[in-house]
Amino acid sequence: ASYTAMQSMPGTGSYSGGGGKATCSTSTHIYGFMGGGNTVFQRYEIATGNWEGLSPTPWAQNYGAGLVWTGGDYIWAVQGASTTGFARYEISTNTWSSGYVQCPFAVYWAGTSLAYGGGDYIYLVQGGSTSTEYATNNFARYSISGNTWTLLAFPTAGCGASLVWAGSATPQR
Image (cartoon, rainbow, N blue to C red):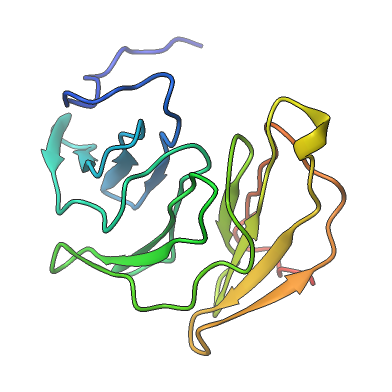
């Protein structure tokens, strides 16, 4: 196997020391936060290899920021930075909406992860830091149609926790 170096995400912000570097993809683009306390949001067009600046996020992204595409026209995001910030990006209009119920716990440090389970739900694990004192078992499910969060059981997670949806598998509670 081999890898091809691609064009880096452009910008003048910090890529280190500030965290929050999050990505998600659609069938044609890869979307990314710059992190480092910035509001920079960009997308990479897979066919052309070019980056495009998009509407800034409604808040500065930092450690624990995350993105998830739910199919169609929407990308959902958590802010990170020990906050409960939660917002939706509409691809077709290049706009952010932050009038949604906030996360049920502060989202911080490494290991925060979002996954779309198909249908009506987005899943969130809080993550932790490099220290066991910040290990957590905070896990929640967001209902898109109901604009509500439900806390779920999860084993203790820390730095590097991650979620993924297996596509055709049926999500379990």
